[in-house]
Image (cartoon, rainbow, N blue to C red; front, top):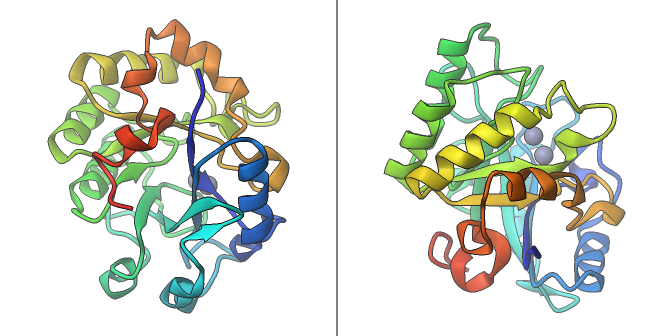
Length: 237
Ligand SMILES: [Zn+2]
Ligand SMILES: [Zn+2]
C-alpha cells in the first residue's frame, strides 16, 4: 500500500518540529509524494504559531519542488469542542485538521466528554479531518465518532507517529486503531494514513501503521490519501 499525499506534517513554526516548509516539500518529492498538507499546531499549543502565521500562509506557492503544498492547520479541539483558531483565519486555509492535545485548551477528563468534544469538532463544517482519534490518552466512543464522521464527510486519521517507540501503547493503541479501521470500513468513512512528521526524514513514513490497516482489511480504495483523485472528492485543491 502506498500513499500519494501526506495530510499531516509540522514545520519549525509548530515550536517543537525541526524542518522548514521547503525541506518538508523536498523530502516529499524525494519520496514520490504528490501532495503534503502543512498542518502546524494551532496557537494554543505551547510554542505554537501566532494566528498571524495562518493569516499570512497564502504567501507560499501552491507547488514547492513539484509537490502540491496544502496550507493547513492542526487546530486544537478545546474542552467545548470548538477550535483555537477563529473562523476568519480558518477561512484563509485550504485544509483544516483538528485534534485534542495536552496543555492546549482541552481539560476534560472522561470518555463521554472526549467523545462529545470530538463530535462537535466533526460537526464544524470547516473541519475535514480528525487527527489521532484512536488515542489512549483521550479515549472516545469510537462507533459514535465514526458515525458522526460519516454524516459530516470527515476523514479519520491513522497516525503513524503515535506508534513511535516512546508513544506506542500510550497514544498509539493497536486495539483502538483496529477497531476504528474496521468500523470506518463498515460505515464507509474515509480513513487517511499520515506521518505527523516533525522532521523532514519522516515525511510520508507510515511503515508503523501499515500492518494494522492491513489486518483491519482496509484496501487502497478505503484510504483517501492513496490517490489524489480520491482525495479530491473530499478536499478541493
Ligand atoms: Zn496532534
Ligand atoms: Zn500533529
